[in-house]
Length: 304
Image: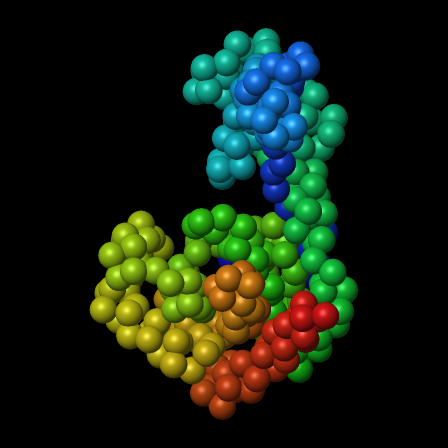
């Protein structure tokens, strides 16, 4: 959710998820002269490749339950009690309580002692922040983002495509002013919303059918006919950058430029967001130019 605040402190470094499966592969030691399956063939004397099969990992129930709890809490707008959470997730109440207590020790969830309710904690955001900040360019482009934010009095965000339907805020800079637009590092944004969404629609190679399907899924977020959205996508494709005039968040305008991955599709978007009263066509052109310098720096570093 995009918030508007009168005073703002830069958000704490924040936001991911990591999983791994282990499998044991046993190889049969061939007997001399035994043909096939990893043996040395008598004809050539060349060892044949072994076709290994990995056994599926056995899920650890406590870990699986913890993942369900974290996923559920991350989607809730209000804290929830143990009994309700356990019932809705079909978990044993005692088990659910013990997992919540353990997660709270790691600050992955937070507990309200007064109401005995639980909510997602900032620790989960810190974990994701460390993962998302692995891009070596961030320390270099952060001062550029801060300069643009101060110069134009806007909020500048760097968004990374982290899934088929999501962009994630990996860095941001907030301009000076009594009224400011804020987001959180680690916050997810639907792929096709806002100016960054126009970039993804224009340059990701979606067919018209797929684009329409994705667009329809976001209908609750905006009042925009698909035909108008298509026109905006075509304009974005023609000029190479995007502008969204309040279709994502009313009363705001965002300008966004793409950074393409090796596959030719946009993997990152750098956006500047302002209040509609700050907007003019000339200003949007200048912001797009300034954001384009960030994209250029990142491109040049990745060619090295």
